[in-house]
Structure formats: structure tokens, C-alpha cells
Length: 236
Image (cartoon, rainbow, N blue to C red; front, side, top):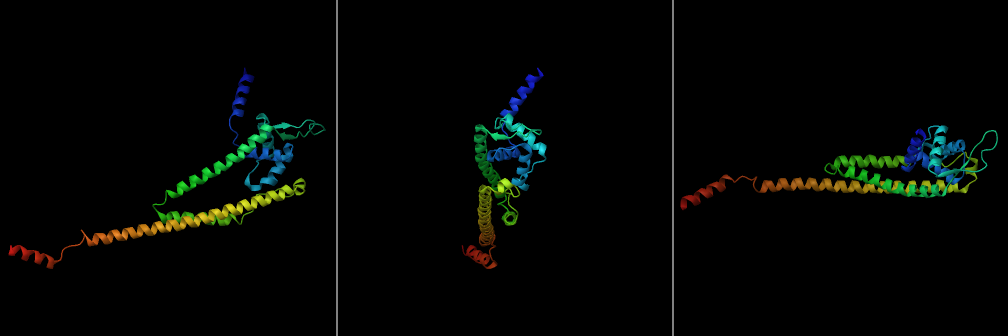
């Protein structure tokens, strides 16, 4: 009975969406080329650097178990030989398909996070000064990001050094980062100009309102006007 419960729990766990970024990253490395756990942990550190962390080598073993249970990877036959077996894993057809769908889904998630940020920011349009302060800090953060080190691209890995795709990876990452930051800075400057215009329009609106009040109901009749009204009354 206990085994039946465990199988049911395992099926439920496998059926649920896989959210672990580490698991997906390891699957991507296996798609790049078949590997065993320890080598995958080393490649993970070299490839992702500080962008994504692997807590330990045992974390890689746990992730491989999850990927295997989900039928995203499979063991390469004949890789368990020798005194210290190092089973290698390769991606399955399902693994390739799911990885593709994950990458496309990440685009939508990134757009959703950006929309949430914009909605939170526009909630401050009643206070343009505060909103402009946030925009300034946002722009400064973008400028700071241009000076930070990019994602690691496999330096120190002999197999990666001989692979021209690594150089292409570095160029693609650098260009995407450059274009993305340039777009964010351009948007920040546009948002600042719009907020300044909003603040100026509101300031002018308050001034016009005060001036209008002074010319109409807020203006008292002069004594001379009152005297003329009294003379017209006595003549009648």
C-alpha cells in the first residue's frame, strides 16, 4: 500500500509544472551536449556564473533525478562502465520540446513583470515629482548595469574554448544586453519628459483657477460702485 501511495505522489509531482530555473538550465546544458552529474555542475558554474547559482554538486544529482522522472532526459547506454561509473545523460524528444516551450514562456513572463512595474509606477502619476525620482533611479540602475560583468560564457572549459558557438553566445548576450538597456534608458527619458509636462500642466491649471476666482465671485464691489447704486435708488 505504501508503494502505491508513493507512486501516486510521484505521478502528481511529475504532472505538475517544473518551475526550477536550475533544472531548466541543466536541461539546456544536456541539450548542448550529453554530460554526467559532476561535469554538469562544473559547466553550470562556468556558464551561468552569478546569474544562477547551484548550491552544491548534490543539487545537480537531485535535478537529474527530476529530469529523468519527467522523461526529459535519458541515460546513455554503456556509460556506467569502469571502477567509477559516470552515467551520461542526453535529452529526449520531450525534453527538447519542453525546453523550447519554456524559453518562449519566459518571454511572456518577462513582459508580464515589466507590465506590473509600469502599472505600479503609473499609480504615482498624482505625484509627478515622486514618479520622476523613481524614474531617475531606474535610469541610474540601467546605466550601472552596463558596467557590470555579463553572464559567463564557459571560460576555462577546454571543450567550450574549442567551440565557436561559445563566442557566438557571448556576442548574442552582449548585443541583447546593449539593446535592452538602450531601450530602457530611452523609455526612462521619455517618461521623465511626460511627467514634467504633466506637472507643468497641473501647476498652470491651479494658477488659472486662482486667477479666475479673483476676477469673479471672489472680487468685492468698490465703495464707488455702491454709491452709484444708492443714487439710482433715490432717483426712483
